[in-house]
Length: 286
Image (cartoon, rainbow, N blue to C red; front, side, top):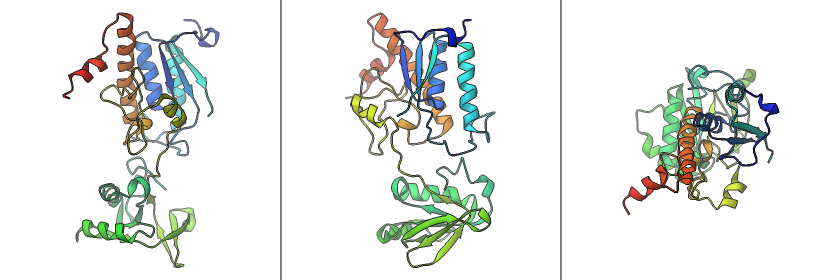
């Protein structure tokens, strides 16, 4: 096999993959398995770039995501001649990924704003937190109306409470662990951890706008299952950019499915036929 650093990037490739995270890496190796050429454009900026370990992926649980990305990239380059990589520039968000090490803590908090503000989501995150802490406080940051809705829905048996005071800042907690919440009234409260899912924004948002891709109300790229085709025919999306559940296993699964859909699309064009995705869309009831 010719080493890739000596193999020129082809002028025409079958697939362009934007993003070198778990979904993009999986899509690349899946495309390679069906003898398709692809270029992965990697900004080297990732949603979980500030974490030192990720979870729920067999053999990689608890390890550094940087090591995972490096190993996946190297494995693909060593085994396939058709995949090329190009660099491009342009609290706890998940209690399955984080929080286990703090299990049994006296109390934890949930910041119920942005994507966590809807009642079903806030209660879901609070229940996750209650698996790890003895008591959970849901903070609404001054939204008294929403706090009343939460209180009515919590029920008498849940180890939860709602705090509607306005928050001024968070600081690292005592002994450099946990965090301390400072309120507008001058009081503070210590928590072992705080769960919050900040509103996500597409790193490739300008590209999505240029292509005219339809987005979901949450701002993700809207795709059709199972292959992840977008509103633009022949354009597919996988991973955090098109999923409400932004986890590594989900991204890996989506990357594999999407690459299969891309292969079907490319191959169908060779013979003037419908792709699987197009056929399935036509079978949907009007």
